[in-house]
Length: 182
Image 1: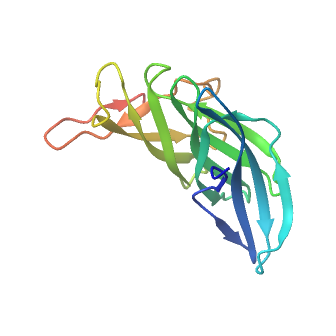
Image 2 (image 1 turned 135 degrees about the vertical axis):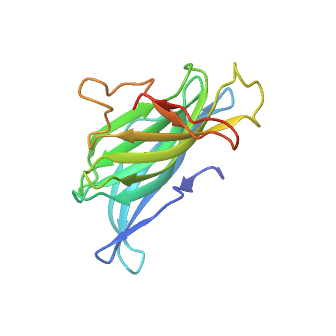
């Protein structure tokens, strides 16, 4: 239907290519429902393993993936549910979900996107993205940079792995910087 796609990022390791691919399942009231397939391909492009993620969810996209220091795969992106929500998804080498965490800044209806992910030297995660506060800044020209730092399990601290996670704003020139909650 023209809306099926690969993720924006590919991961190469040990002569194997990892590729996330989204498939449009249905469109209801202009909202696309997507399911994801995670694939390993060999150097000739032949599929070695194709694992379908069983749930279908609203309009979500994988932006980047990395091979973590513990030899797992970390994906980042966003999905839409009352506003865009950032996500970090951790897979083992067999493409099984270890965990998936959802993050957003501000009100539930605001737009929060995560575009890339990396690791700190202690195994913690750092993601970068943007958010848009539709109440305080009522136009899409008012995007804020969003820097998300978590421990290796995607949590800010033990017991704080849920939504409405903290953020760091990168101030515009001439403004002070606000660091929260760190």
